[in-house]
Image (tube, rainbow over all chains, first blue to last red; front, side, top):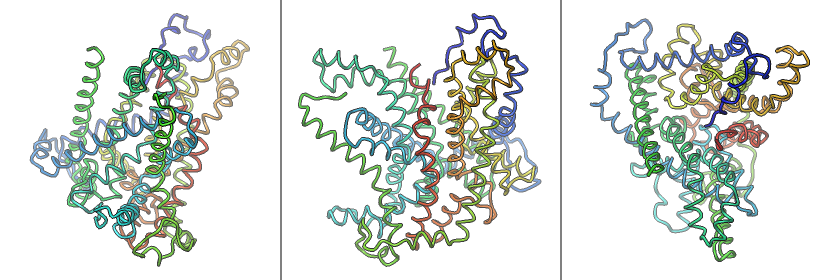
Length: 311
Length: 280
């Protein structure tokens, strides 16, 4: 996301000559405080403390003493098979949802930029999940996957396609793929909107010139659309990955991590540790580990993209 | 953009793909709508159809007669209204500074807005829970509203400051030359010009609070305090499988306010979120 460069203004003298820029330090501070104070007290400070709690034996009970225990929690995590599997599931989930979502949203964005009749319908439908509570999205897909009264199995039954008797959300094999599809559906709006804005900002002249030179549609997609979209693609896929890895409500409603932990995302695991078993320290350590994993994946990803650009 | 050497065939292909998108995006919605209009007998039939044989509004009246659901809807309304008003009121002055003044605090503020997206909520909620417990604000709407305000602020600030940027500085300069004070400029000039942006942002904050689930799950315990998403999630756990019809109806009713508001603001919303984000 860009921030308007402030170089032009710095050349001007401070004072009332430029509106807004003439805000004195005290004035600016007075205007900032009502928003910044709550953010610092209820967001920045808790976050810092939360990172620290991961290194303590904090528990939920009132008046229990808390001790600094160094990296004990993290050592325990590494020996916790539930932790390892939940992070594996988290990475599979976030990776697949982000990748599938990106492909589908890119296709949709390209279609929506075409003069097609009825594209308003697809555009509106693609935005709907944005307005829906995650809980309702979960309920909706539960109705969809319902083994007896659900529509998916009915379609399979009528089409004589195998799988009509599967209880998708309770199946060891199918629960995770099913949940991934729901994740893709729920995240379509943000991704599509970002990519559509990117597609529309590409100048038509580039495509026209390439068409005159005899480039095929695929060549133009490869050499114009994709490179021009690069910054948007990198930004939105990174954000999607973070959001998905940290996601909670959707899967909580769909499967609550089941069957037998097959869809236990890291946030579900951490929530259970903290608010079912009262293991605040352990849960915070889980949160710390999530930050490390997200940062690691992002660095790896962004570094790869960067190398591509310079190569 | 993608024009193949067979324009006609390409067009047909595009419409076909567009249709597949419409099915993927719209079918689950249509199914929930269909279930919500089916009577109990039709819901247990072995071969369910998309269009109900007999359209009934019983599920909706059942949902509206559930005292728990109605009470939780009132709770959600109260919490979302207060959250959105407070967030916009304290966010507006700060957004003005963020948009108009370059400096360390501004850069820190904007940096935090982006950085805060990265951290899992579990890291924030545990210390917040401890803090609210010390203040005796857990299991209370006041505590939840406090959390919602802080949680919505980064996004709200980001949107508002991009709207402020949209107002030309010349307008303010002219007023300064005419001798208007800072307060006069903010209230008399900026606020009216910003009105559409303020409305969009407030409604967005409302939707965010109305839809939120995780914080409510952690902070609220008493059944009479629950919000709508919380109540719906319990509904799934306890009796959802048995009573699909009322569940679908309740879920649809719960979505209606956010969907209506979202339809009103979506044009401005996407503009506010993406201005400066794509080209730059």
